[in-house]
Image 1 (cartoon, rainbow, N blue to C red):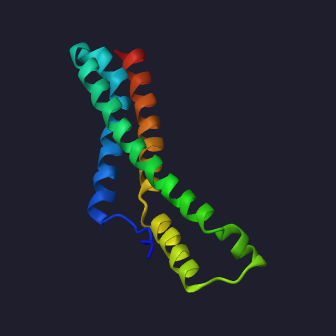
Image 2 (image 1 turned 180 degrees about the horizontal axis):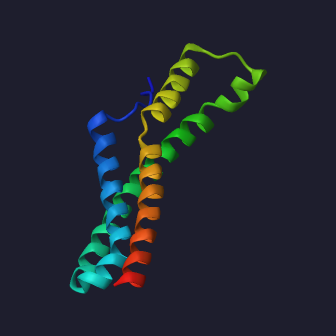
Length: 130
């Protein structure tokens, strides 16, 4: 019997959320650090890049797992009304919907958006009023 995909534990979800947030902060700090503490630019850049490598590798894995579930089980065709949904199909759809709802990627995107605006404002302030 084939094992159904499942969502990862909350610990993993929050771990990668934190990794993504730390990376976002690191990249947004670079311009400010370049003006205030140039020696920290390279280590903070590495922190951001390594964090994003981990974060986006995780997000890629999750996206591919969802796509594979959909394609391998013809779920698009089935929910379009061209076939009946089996109990297995319902379990797979439950996994997909739970995975999307449990995901914290929207928090990361919102954080990056707000932090980017703050970074631009701070850089503008530092470069014009320093």
